[in-house]
Image (tube, rainbow over the protein chains, first blue to last red):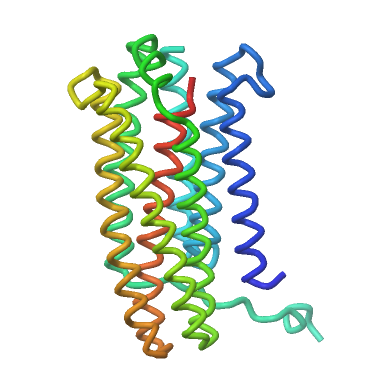
Length: 89
Length: 195
């Protein structure tokens, strides 16, 4: 796969993920279980962010410490936000 | 022949753009992480108010703006790629498309805010709207700066210069623009989608 086509595939996946998480907010897939729906929305959000970091910002080819820093931030931030959300859910 | 000699050499790690830009990006990510955490912490303390206020937001406009910024980032990533292959004119055209998406975002945000303010929702209505206007406002400032950055990149690349220095400048600006995209992806989920 060329870099150009990979960038384009990533863009398509990001658009589809946006519509999927949007529909999760309207009962799709989780029905009335809004807490699971919100958890899925937050997880998809950080998966989207990961791909923008790796493929658009090119962290995939960046020095490993920088990539690891952003990967760790993504996982940690997602976990903190999901955790804080559940304290009030 | 040893196996290792059969494998192509892995490319050297490459930091796109200037180190200083990445310091700024890290700082901005830290600040917005605090914003996200504070928002969701206070939301958890008054879910009913935040959920009721969120229902007044226009999700279609929020989703449309997400598509605009994702597409803009895509154009910028392609523009960097084109410049590396010495295709300066294509790169310049892609930057125009990216800036166009950014301007589209600002126009949509103008109508969205006008709709809210017209309906009587302002920064002082309640905590949700304080965060809504504050966070989307700070982000909008990033978008406006980003459009300026994209315009500058266009003015450099349109001259046909695809030297190594120009590529570094292009990568630096592109990294900032992708950050703007990333911040919006998170804001869209926190302000518009989560229930």
